[in-house]
Image 1 (cartoon, one colour):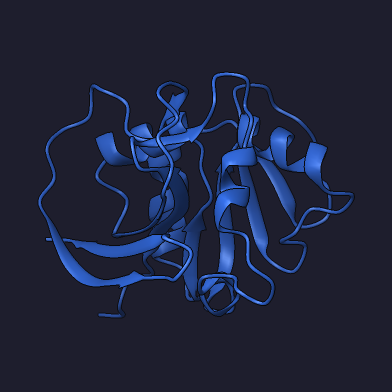
Image 2: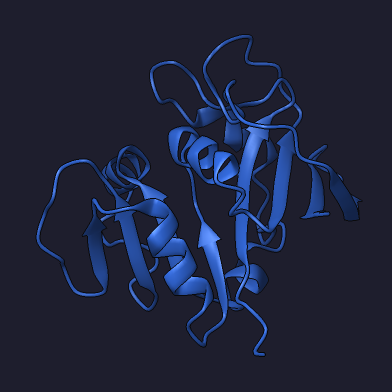
Length: 177
């Protein structure tokens, strides 16, 4: 039997668990911006050939950049509103479990979940996330969009690694047990 591909959540959050403010502001991420430091992001994305992200996250990314950053990767934007594909970007409104199982059972590299919170919650409910790489930003936002929403089952995780950076960012890497 071939090894299944893994779905990896790679995301940043504030120390108190928020991925953005209520107004979708991501400026808190700039607290750790440092010339020449990407906290392993490029090395990680080099191991990925497929990206899954929620429509709100996709829309937010597209307000920040001119070109979608993963044009070289098969991308699925999870949405409730069907839309035509654009290059390697497919707007997917079907069954999430069917999509992820199909991707995991197809040859390839890692599958990268790029957020957001609603998608992460659904993937956790369906027990589809295999690894979590979370960069914790040294800031308390107090309120905002929580990475881990209520209503998901308990999951035991095993710590693979943790790394503290000079900027105060701490990156933790967990695998599902």
